[in-house]
Length: 498
Ligand SMILES: C[S@@+](CC[C@H](N)C(=O)[O-])C[C@H]1O[C@@H](n2cnc3c(N)ncnc32)[C@H](O)[C@@H]1O
Ligand code: SF4
Image 1 (cartoon, rainbow, N blue to C red):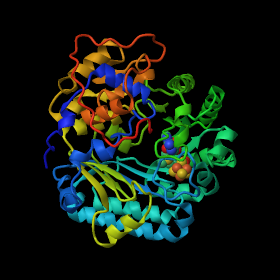
Image 2: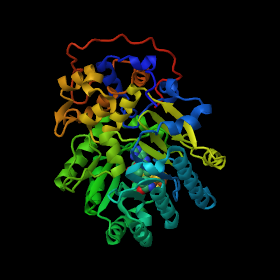
Image 3: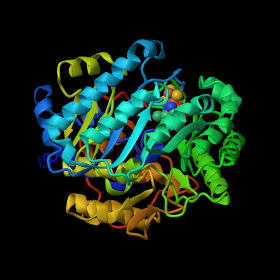
Image 4: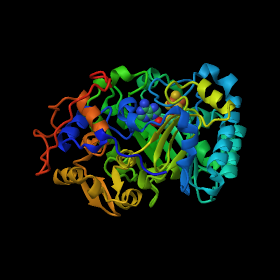
């Protein structure tokens, strides 16, 4: 399967200065979670439902190395801030065991349809939701299925996510995962502010579990221990970020990952407008400073800080995605998959309900809700967006994937970021955010979006946009040519809706 021809709107490149300004203005939207506005911006690439079952496996022909993500959509309670695909916790008891039967069916369907046994996994994440909530025997079935249906080398680090409460109260589960060969564990601490924890529906008692959880994780043998913390909440003072970081560091993890709160699609969506870019930048800067002082390394804009030399800190699965744009297959409710030329979302991605996913598998069909056949521009934008998880685009990976250099594909945009000092060439072979570019990351990332997505941003953020943080003037843009804006069709986007 080859690339889809580029859709007309994606053949356009609006003026980088305008796109940059729109990205800054829409800083709650312009981030690594790409694409934006699927229904309109991706419409030309969407395959009709009737062809999905035949086309989806074809997209994996010739893919020899891939990542695997398995989604477990169960949680004890749904946290108010969470954007992930989690089913109504009231249904957990009746759904859990049957869900793993379905997952195993999905593994088997892919094995048959795409000959996955001949493919090598380069990363394997078990995420959620809370994958440690069900009995570990279910995770054992998942790991066995991965070994049966794919070539899974010993060198691949399997990673799993936990809550502090389960890691603190059920250490036997941690031992069970370690015995299965899982070697990396990630725990969501999020915040130490009792007010925030309460508002998030994540009771303040979870704080008491953090230390016991960290101890149990080490006792079980894990040497790759990550702690997630979040920032960018409405009304969150800097002291709350500082206290959270100090607490996270005191747990002595190997990695700490900073998640800026993403409001879109969450119960807190209405609060997005209360958080300014200046606030989140100050919070990130403080966190980064504290982490560096404690021996955790991270380049500007990077989310995961690591204190292990030579280890970037993310799971093998995510590292491959970020650096090399490696294809990944996502199994489970609402999971996302990316081959070289397609992007797919499983059933449940939108409604977070099991019915459709279950029905498709019971009918022996791959549980895919939306399948997009990508143009090079759409695929490049997806790869680069994920690369900004590290604040850096790996140039050789890009060239290998698209047969063109980044500079050939995005000449005006690369010139713009270099001229303005927002990015710089850095060893080994990356184009990286500079300290000056890091607070302007939302504008920078939008420069590499596909034309339709840029137009979508421009439609909902009419210029003039505010000047960049801490600067009184708009960026310069050398002699790059200003391309005329397309007449704005009505994309069905409601103005100002974020
Ligand atoms: C899929 S969650 C799983 C972690 C685990 N269930 C827990 O709560 O500890 C992974 C991480 O995503 C982050 N996260 C959740 N909702 C988010 C949002 N709306 N915006 C940004 N990050 C979010 C949190 O830091 C969370 O630990
Ligand atoms: S943050 Fe974790 S525990 Fe809370 S709802 Fe999301 S996945 Fe579940």
